[in-house]
Image (tube, rainbow over all chains, first blue to last red):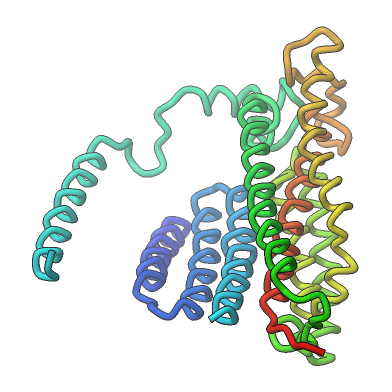
Length: 80
Length: 258
């Protein structure tokens, strides 16, 4: 029962943070919100009994993707 | 089209999409229920057949090994494509700028000038990430993880080197040609392990190596070497991507004439 509560909690947190990613209009802030979204998603995958997917999501969604997006943003800002 | 008409259209089509989604959801099986027979069958036979404790890894690198080979080459091709685009741009810029122009010293984004505390704790984290990444790659057949997960975790250590120590140590630890070799060797290694089965009389990617004892590191036949090859390929591919992106940052530095 408590594990189901955990699942419901993480599902709603992913829904909230996913909406937050869309509503954040400043790209630099959006990167960090998206990183949190990736982190919450990996917790959700863990809650849904798929730890293998959670491990890839935590490394790709919360680390690699924000880093590359930040680098791209920095480059765009400089070339202006 | 004016703004009001666009809003009407988006609400109309949004409601239509919502209707279709809700309609589709009524046909789904209840939460947590699995209707297909395939997963249940594999769950009951995979450990006995392949001597691996992680059925997900067994599916990825053995039962569905051919699909994973395709995914492997998707990653390989996308890294190669990204590098191709960015290096093309690099040569264009080098041709465009004057030969005597020198670059400004790189500060700010490239060399963050991190504090001693950041550098010291980054060292601890880098060591821990490397050990954890190797562990995840090597024990994919015994528990959670496998080549892809471990490879991405390993590559994040390089990211931390860049963030804490700046671009110069990062460059020293990410030799492009060595990384390209590792990436190609990882991707090719997977295909070669598959071909190895052909030479001993099986189908492509058949698990022909001795299965060993369940729970031991050297067990599960070809799953273990394939996982290691994937780990090397993914780690090298991601570090190559980081390297190219950060190099692009330095290229954008304004040029100063001597």
